[in-house]
Figure (cartoon, rainbow, N blue to C red):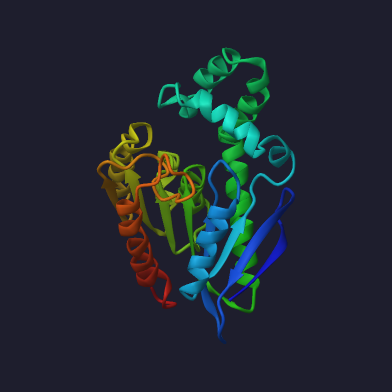
Amino acid sequence: MSEREVKVVTPQREIDCYLALPGGEGMHAAVIVIHEIFGPDAHIRDVARRFAAQGYVAAAPNLFTGEFQRVLTPENIALVMQSFAKAPPDLRRDPSKMAAFTASQPPERRPVLEVFGKIQSPEMLASFAKDLYAVARYLGSLPEVDPRRIGSVGFCFGGGMSGRLATVDPELRAAVIFYGQNPPLPDIPKIHAAVLGLYGGEDPGITGTVPDLDAAMRTAGKQFEYHVYPGAKHAFFNDTRASNYHSASAADAWPRVLTFFDTHLRSPAG
Protein backbone atom coordinates (compact mmCIF):
# COMPACT_ATOMS: atom_id res chain seq x y z
CA MET A 1 0.00 0.00 0.00
CA SER A 2 1.07 3.58 -0.65
CA GLU A 3 -0.36 6.93 0.35
CA ARG A 4 -0.06 10.51 -0.81
CA GLU A 5 -1.54 13.97 -0.42
CA VAL A 6 -3.01 15.57 -3.53
CA LYS A 7 -4.96 18.65 -4.57
CA VAL A 8 -8.25 18.22 -6.42
CA VAL A 9 -9.53 21.08 -8.55
CA THR A 10 -13.30 21.47 -8.42
CA PRO A 11 -15.46 23.94 -10.37
CA GLN A 12 -15.38 26.20 -7.31
CA ARG A 13 -11.97 25.83 -5.67
CA GLU A 14 -9.06 23.50 -4.89
CA ILE A 15 -9.37 21.03 -2.02
CA ASP A 16 -6.92 18.83 -0.16
CA CYS A 17 -7.31 15.08 -0.51
CA TYR A 18 -5.62 12.07 1.07
CA LEU A 19 -5.13 9.00 -1.13
CA ALA A 20 -4.49 5.44 0.01
CA LEU A 21 -3.62 3.04 -2.80
CA PRO A 22 -3.34 -0.75 -2.76
CA GLY A 23 -0.35 -2.57 -4.12
CA GLY A 24 -0.47 -4.64 -7.26
CA GLU A 25 -0.89 -4.00 -10.95
CA GLY A 26 -4.00 -3.15 -12.90
CA MET A 27 -7.01 -0.92 -12.37
CA HIS A 28 -8.89 -0.98 -9.09
CA ALA A 29 -12.31 0.01 -7.87
CA ALA A 30 -12.28 3.21 -5.82
CA VAL A 31 -14.08 4.52 -2.74
CA ILE A 32 -14.49 8.13 -1.62
CA VAL A 33 -14.33 8.24 2.20
CA ILE A 34 -16.20 11.30 3.42
CA HIS A 35 -15.37 12.72 6.82
CA GLU A 36 -17.41 13.59 9.87
CA ILE A 37 -17.86 17.16 11.06
CA PHE A 38 -14.32 16.83 12.50
CA GLY A 39 -12.75 16.78 9.03
CA PRO A 40 -10.46 14.04 7.63
CA ASP A 41 -8.86 13.16 10.96
CA ALA A 42 -6.84 10.08 11.95
CA HIS A 43 -9.98 7.92 12.07
CA ILE A 44 -11.01 8.78 8.50
CA ARG A 45 -7.50 8.18 7.19
CA ASP A 46 -7.45 4.84 8.98
CA VAL A 47 -10.71 3.88 7.28
CA ALA A 48 -9.20 4.87 3.91
CA ARG A 49 -6.22 2.61 4.60
CA ARG A 50 -8.57 -0.24 5.53
CA PHE A 51 -10.16 0.04 2.10
CA ALA A 52 -6.75 0.11 0.43
CA ALA A 53 -5.89 -3.10 2.29
CA GLN A 54 -8.98 -4.62 0.67
CA GLY A 55 -7.79 -3.65 -2.81
CA TYR A 56 -9.60 -0.33 -3.30
CA VAL A 57 -8.12 3.05 -4.12
CA ALA A 58 -9.46 5.25 -1.32
CA ALA A 59 -9.74 9.04 -1.41
CA ALA A 60 -10.49 11.09 1.71
CA PRO A 61 -11.14 14.68 0.56
CA ASN A 62 -11.14 17.59 2.99
CA LEU A 63 -14.39 19.41 2.25
CA PHE A 64 -13.45 22.00 4.87
CA THR A 65 -10.24 23.05 3.09
CA GLY A 66 -9.68 26.75 3.75
CA GLU A 67 -11.98 28.94 5.82
CA PHE A 68 -13.85 26.17 7.63
CA GLN A 69 -10.68 24.26 8.50
CA ARG A 70 -9.23 27.31 10.23
CA VAL A 71 -12.30 27.62 12.48
CA LEU A 72 -13.03 23.96 13.10
CA THR A 73 -10.01 23.15 15.24
CA PRO A 74 -10.26 20.19 17.63
CA GLU A 75 -10.51 22.61 20.55
CA ASN A 76 -13.36 24.59 18.98
CA ILE A 77 -15.22 21.45 18.00
CA ALA A 78 -14.94 20.15 21.57
CA LEU A 79 -16.54 23.39 22.77
CA VAL A 80 -19.54 23.18 20.47
CA MET A 81 -20.04 19.46 21.06
CA GLN A 82 -20.66 20.37 24.70
CA SER A 83 -23.43 22.64 23.48
CA PHE A 84 -24.91 20.04 21.14
CA ALA A 85 -25.02 17.49 23.94
CA LYS A 86 -27.92 19.47 25.45
CA ALA A 87 -29.59 20.45 22.17
CA PRO A 88 -32.73 18.93 20.62
CA PRO A 89 -31.99 16.08 18.17
CA ASP A 90 -33.44 17.86 15.14
CA LEU A 91 -31.42 21.04 15.69
CA ARG A 92 -29.01 20.62 12.81
CA ARG A 93 -31.81 19.91 10.34
CA ASP A 94 -33.64 23.17 11.07
CA PRO A 95 -31.78 26.43 10.15
CA SER A 96 -34.08 28.65 12.21
CA LYS A 97 -33.63 26.50 15.31
CA MET A 98 -29.89 26.43 14.72
CA ALA A 99 -29.74 30.22 14.50
CA ALA A 100 -31.74 30.66 17.71
CA PHE A 101 -29.64 28.06 19.50
CA THR A 102 -26.40 29.77 18.39
CA ALA A 103 -27.60 33.11 19.73
CA SER A 104 -28.33 31.51 23.12
CA GLN A 105 -24.82 30.13 23.60
CA PRO A 106 -21.78 31.74 25.31
CA PRO A 107 -19.98 34.26 23.07
CA GLU A 108 -16.85 32.14 22.61
CA ARG A 109 -18.91 29.34 21.07
CA ARG A 110 -20.98 31.42 18.67
CA PRO A 111 -18.45 31.84 15.81
CA VAL A 112 -17.94 28.07 15.66
CA LEU A 113 -21.66 27.39 15.84
CA GLU A 114 -22.20 29.88 13.03
CA VAL A 115 -19.76 27.88 10.89
CA PHE A 116 -21.63 24.68 11.81
CA GLY A 117 -24.83 26.33 10.65
CA LYS A 118 -23.26 27.51 7.40
CA ILE A 119 -21.80 24.09 6.66
CA GLN A 120 -25.23 22.52 6.97
CA SER A 121 -27.14 25.09 4.94
CA PRO A 122 -28.77 23.73 1.77
CA GLU A 123 -26.58 25.95 -0.40
CA MET A 124 -23.34 24.77 1.21
CA LEU A 125 -24.35 21.11 1.13
CA ALA A 126 -25.08 21.44 -2.58
CA SER A 127 -21.66 23.04 -3.06
CA PHE A 128 -19.95 20.21 -1.18
CA ALA A 129 -21.76 17.69 -3.39
CA LYS A 130 -20.23 19.39 -6.45
CA ASP A 131 -16.79 19.10 -4.82
CA LEU A 132 -17.33 15.38 -4.28
CA TYR A 133 -18.45 14.94 -7.86
CA ALA A 134 -15.11 16.48 -8.89
CA VAL A 135 -13.27 14.06 -6.58
CA ALA A 136 -15.04 11.15 -8.28
CA ARG A 137 -13.99 12.43 -11.69
CA TYR A 138 -10.43 12.92 -10.42
CA LEU A 139 -10.34 9.32 -9.20
CA GLY A 140 -11.64 8.14 -12.54
CA SER A 141 -8.74 9.89 -14.26
CA LEU A 142 -6.08 8.00 -12.30
CA PRO A 143 -4.33 5.11 -14.07
CA GLU A 144 -4.86 2.95 -10.97
CA VAL A 145 -8.66 3.36 -11.04
CA ASP A 146 -11.38 1.82 -13.19
CA PRO A 147 -13.72 4.81 -13.70
CA ARG A 148 -16.70 2.46 -14.02
CA ARG A 149 -16.27 1.24 -10.44
CA ILE A 150 -16.44 4.16 -8.01
CA GLY A 151 -18.42 4.29 -4.78
CA SER A 152 -18.65 6.41 -1.64
CA VAL A 153 -18.95 5.98 2.09
CA GLY A 154 -19.45 8.70 4.68
CA PHE A 155 -19.88 9.12 8.40
CA CYS A 156 -22.20 11.56 10.22
CA PHE A 157 -21.91 14.77 8.15
CA GLY A 158 -20.11 12.65 5.56
CA GLY A 159 -22.86 10.05 5.60
CA GLY A 160 -25.30 12.71 4.52
CA MET A 161 -22.86 13.83 1.84
CA SER A 162 -22.48 10.27 0.55
CA GLY A 163 -26.22 10.21 -0.07
CA ARG A 164 -26.12 13.67 -1.68
CA LEU A 165 -23.29 12.63 -3.96
CA ALA A 166 -25.49 9.80 -5.23
CA THR A 167 -28.10 12.38 -6.28
CA VAL A 168 -25.64 14.40 -8.40
CA ASP A 169 -23.34 11.71 -9.84
CA PRO A 170 -25.11 9.33 -12.24
CA GLU A 171 -21.90 7.31 -12.60
CA LEU A 172 -21.56 6.54 -8.88
CA ARG A 173 -22.13 2.81 -8.45
CA ALA A 174 -22.62 2.42 -4.70
CA ALA A 175 -23.07 4.73 -1.71
CA VAL A 176 -22.91 3.92 2.02
CA ILE A 177 -24.49 6.22 4.59
CA PHE A 178 -23.23 5.78 8.16
CA TYR A 179 -25.68 7.63 10.46
CA GLY A 180 -26.03 10.57 8.09
CA GLN A 181 -28.98 12.76 7.22
CA ASN A 182 -31.17 11.77 4.29
CA PRO A 183 -30.45 13.30 0.91
CA PRO A 184 -33.20 15.69 -0.24
CA LEU A 185 -36.17 13.42 -0.90
CA PRO A 186 -37.22 15.26 -4.10
CA ASP A 187 -33.79 14.32 -5.54
CA ILE A 188 -34.16 10.57 -4.91
CA PRO A 189 -35.25 9.83 -8.52
CA LYS A 190 -31.84 11.11 -9.68
CA ILE A 191 -30.00 8.33 -7.82
CA HIS A 192 -28.46 5.58 -9.95
CA ALA A 193 -26.28 3.99 -7.26
CA ALA A 194 -27.22 1.22 -4.89
CA VAL A 195 -27.42 2.65 -1.36
CA LEU A 196 -26.70 1.04 2.02
CA GLY A 197 -27.59 2.77 5.29
CA LEU A 198 -26.19 1.89 8.73
CA TYR A 199 -27.72 3.57 11.77
CA GLY A 200 -27.69 3.55 15.58
CA GLY A 201 -30.83 2.69 17.50
CA GLU A 202 -29.93 5.34 20.10
CA ASP A 203 -29.63 8.10 17.49
CA PRO A 204 -33.28 9.16 17.03
CA GLY A 205 -32.56 12.48 15.34
CA ILE A 206 -31.08 10.58 12.38
CA THR A 207 -32.54 7.09 12.57
CA GLY A 208 -36.09 8.35 12.98
CA THR A 209 -35.98 9.81 9.46
CA VAL A 210 -34.82 6.64 7.71
CA PRO A 211 -38.31 5.24 7.02
CA ASP A 212 -38.97 8.37 4.92
CA LEU A 213 -35.84 7.64 2.87
CA ASP A 214 -36.81 3.99 2.52
CA ALA A 215 -40.29 4.90 1.28
CA ALA A 216 -38.94 7.45 -1.20
CA MET A 217 -36.36 5.00 -2.56
CA ARG A 218 -38.99 2.29 -2.97
CA THR A 219 -41.40 4.66 -4.69
CA ALA A 220 -38.66 5.71 -7.12
CA GLY A 221 -37.65 2.11 -7.77
CA LYS A 222 -34.17 2.56 -6.30
CA GLN A 223 -32.04 0.00 -4.48
CA PHE A 224 -31.80 0.71 -0.75
CA GLU A 225 -31.09 -1.51 2.21
CA TYR A 226 -30.47 -0.43 5.76
CA HIS A 227 -29.75 -1.80 9.19
CA VAL A 228 -30.38 -0.27 12.61
CA TYR A 229 -28.14 -1.39 15.47
CA PRO A 230 -29.98 -1.59 18.82
CA GLY A 231 -28.04 0.04 21.64
CA ALA A 232 -25.70 1.92 19.29
CA LYS A 233 -25.35 5.70 19.49
CA HIS A 234 -24.48 8.17 16.77
CA ALA A 235 -20.90 7.64 15.50
CA PHE A 236 -20.87 4.04 16.73
CA PHE A 237 -18.23 3.10 14.12
CA ASN A 238 -15.66 5.66 15.28
CA ASP A 239 -13.22 3.76 17.49
CA THR A 240 -11.46 6.99 18.49
CA ARG A 241 -14.55 8.25 20.36
CA ALA A 242 -14.95 6.00 23.38
CA SER A 243 -18.24 7.59 24.42
CA ASN A 244 -19.92 6.61 21.15
CA TYR A 245 -18.02 3.59 19.84
CA HIS A 246 -20.06 0.38 19.90
CA SER A 247 -17.68 -2.45 19.16
CA ALA A 248 -20.26 -5.14 18.37
CA SER A 249 -22.11 -2.90 15.92
CA ALA A 250 -18.88 -1.70 14.29
CA ALA A 251 -17.69 -5.29 13.94
CA ASP A 252 -20.90 -6.19 12.14
CA ALA A 253 -21.02 -3.06 9.98
CA TRP A 254 -17.57 -3.39 8.39
CA PRO A 255 -18.16 -6.76 6.67
CA ARG A 256 -21.59 -5.52 5.55
CA VAL A 257 -19.89 -2.61 3.82
CA LEU A 258 -17.26 -4.83 2.22
CA THR A 259 -19.91 -7.26 0.97
CA PHE A 260 -21.93 -4.37 -0.42
CA PHE A 261 -18.95 -2.92 -2.27
CA ASP A 262 -17.86 -6.38 -3.43
CA THR A 263 -21.30 -6.81 -4.98
CA HIS A 264 -21.49 -3.44 -6.71
CA LEU A 265 -17.88 -2.43 -7.41
CA ARG A 266 -15.83 -5.53 -8.05
CA SER A 267 -16.91 -6.00 -11.67
CA PRO A 268 -17.52 -3.39 -14.39
CA ALA A 269 -21.03 -4.72 -15.00
CA GLY A 270 -21.96 -4.73 -11.30
